[in-house]
Length: 102
Image (cartoon, rainbow, N blue to C red; front, side, top):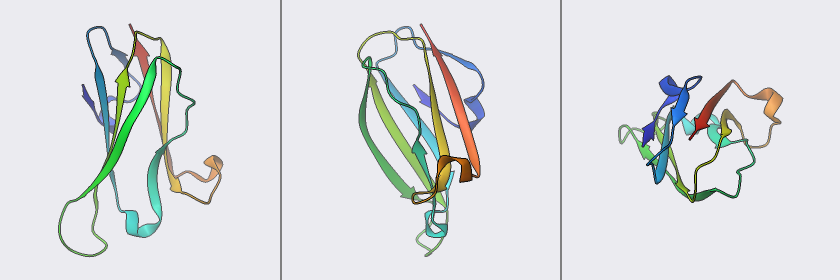
C-alpha cells in the first residue's frame, strides 16, 4: 500500500496489507529531510528507505520513500517529521501522522 502526505489524518485500513510505503517530497539540499519519529510496534518492521531526485539538477527536490513490512495487524499511529537531523522534533517544519487500523 502506497501512502503520501495527502493520506495523513485519515484512518488507514491495513487488513490484507503486507507492505506499507510512505512517500514524501523534500529538497534534501536544504538540510530538511523526512524521518520517522514514532516508535514502531513489534508488528511493523522497517525494510528500508530511498531518495529519488526529480531532476538531475543540483539542489532540486525529490521523493523520500520509507518501506515497512506488516508482521501482523496492529492498531497504532505512525508519525513522520520534516526537519534537520540535528534539530529536535519541536523544530520540525511539518509533522504528519497516519492512523493504522486493522
